[in-house]
Image (cartoon, rainbow, N blue to C red; front, top):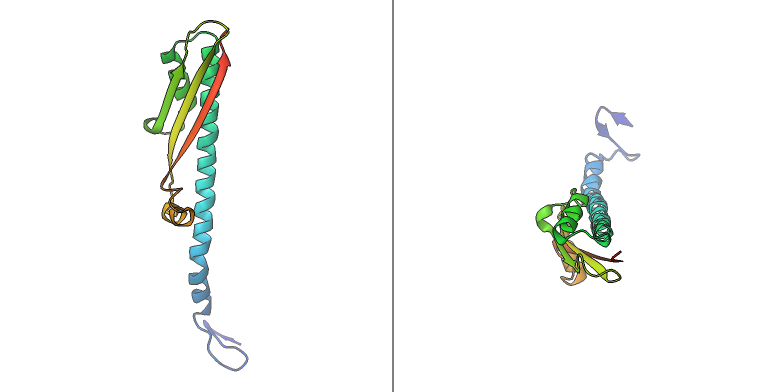
Length: 142
């Protein structure tokens, strides 16, 4: 029986605030799940971008570009990431035909949610507030 905002059960006992208590118990778990989904999506985007940047750099290096041009191409391809956390290493740019140009890209991804302390605890401090994504691409010089 409802009387305004007061809810009574079959025995006439008040159940005021029960929904609020249940909400307070569930909301931390729900927010943790939402934060994990957001961090996973942004981390996945960073990983794909790093991989694509390395491939594009090796591709332009295979046709004879110098190391500075290759690095610029990688940084342009990875423009959606924080450039300060992006490292590019080019090996054997403008080498002899038949050899390979190697482009290594690293990105220090910083978790945006407070999951880092929980992940560190669960993983034994293997995963922390930063995750390093690495990609290497190698293509033969033409």
